[in-house]
Length: 154
Image 1 (cartoon, helix red, strand yellow):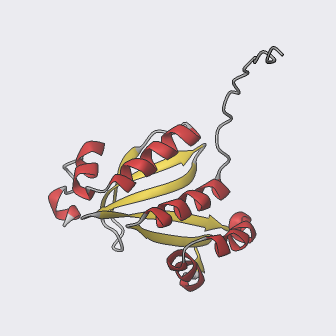
Image 2: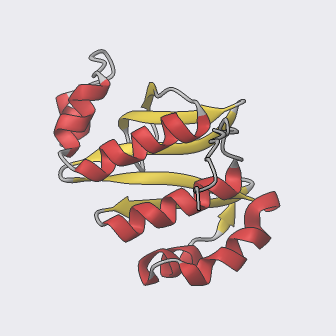
Image 3: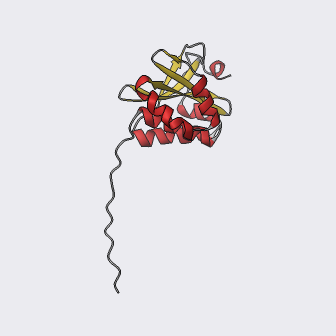
């Protein structure tokens, strides 16, 4: 079990976490968050009884985007849907997988939001998680590349 491998006094590296999870979807989520939002991972210890142990947090301007909880062969992505995001999330929900729709429907609003503990085992679930994160934060502006094409000569 993850919390037994790395106790509070033994901080894992991001590579240790990725090795334990051993799922490319974790790499994809981390890379996507880092590139899309220009954020860096923060490894923190949680004493919460629901998911005790080291986790990876991604925040933008103090706002939580996602917390990754390592599991053997998969990971849990915690995404908190706040009051401000609730209506937009409900509009997006029909485009999400049945699993995420059911989880959203069954998760009660508490402590200022809907705390979705999404088990990411498949690509469609990862895509759903990314949709929900995008509701929480606007991606960084990408620079536009201008191409000058010549008109074809007749």
